[in-house]
Amino acid sequence: MKIDLINEALNGLKVFEPEVYEDERGFFCEVYRKDHFTAAGITDEFVQDNHSKSARGVVRGLHFQWEPPMAKLMRVTQGEAFLVAVDIRIGSPSFGKWHGEFVSDKNRRLVYAPAGFARGFGVISETAEIQYKCTGIYNKNAEAGILWNDPAIGIEWPIIEPTLSAKDKVAPTLSEWLNDPRSKHFTY
Image (cartoon, rainbow, N blue to C red):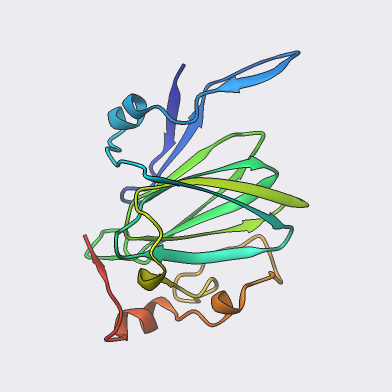
């Protein structure tokens, strides 16, 4: 079994595609093997798994956590979603840049974004279930977000009028977050 690295879109962001064995009974694939990810340069220890389900048109994000810093390995187990990551590490060559990847239960891709990336997704199918491994335990007091449609970042979302949480509707832009003296920042 193998998990192929198919894209290194931004500084540290990686997209993987697992080898899938399919027959008349269904399919089997490995979605995480520490030795394969270590060979690809990912040595993080994942300590929490999350699973969410959302309806078509929902956009969640762009979210991150600074204490403890949290890397995520995301995949879609049902449906299709547009997974997005934005590099918010001051000093990174890809600071302020974004990458979006259409991930589905058909292509079975995985998107890894290290700590210091804001992440989110938009649901393309009727519903989608997203699962993600995290390197930090959730800490409500150390979470934040960047506005999903910050014009300075310029994410090309495939969703025109998204359904958003109250918190995501009023998240600061990247510039506002950087200039807020209460904000905790990531450095590269």
